[in-house]
Length: 130
Image (cartoon, rainbow, N blue to C red):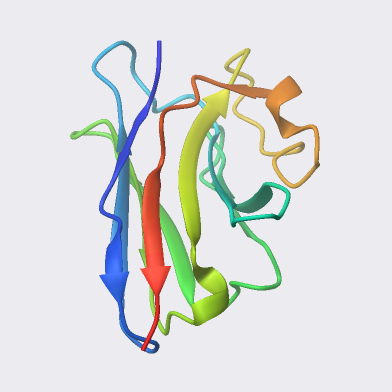
C-alpha cells in the first residue's frame, strides 16, 4: 500500500506549488500524514506533518511561514502548499502516514521517521531554479 504524491514541477524562486498526497487503499483522516523531502546528496528531511487526532500542524524551521499543510477528508487528500519557493527547496517530496494509526506526528522530524511512518510512495520532484 502506497500513498501517491503529486504536484511537483519546475518553478522559479518565489513561485508556488501545491503538492497532493492521496490513496485509494484506506482512509487518511485518522492518520498523521507527513511530508518529507530528499535533495541530491542529502539525507531525508521531515518537512511538515498534520496530526490525525486534532489536526495539529508541524513544520521544519526551514519552511515555517512559507509552507502550509492541510487535509481534505472528503477527498482523502493531504496537501502541502509551498509558497516563496527557494532553490534549496529543490528535492523529491514524499508523503507517508503513521504506521499504526496513532494520529501522532511525534517522530516525523527524526532521521529514522520511517520506523513510525509507512506507505511511502515514489515521491514528486520539485525543482526551484532561475
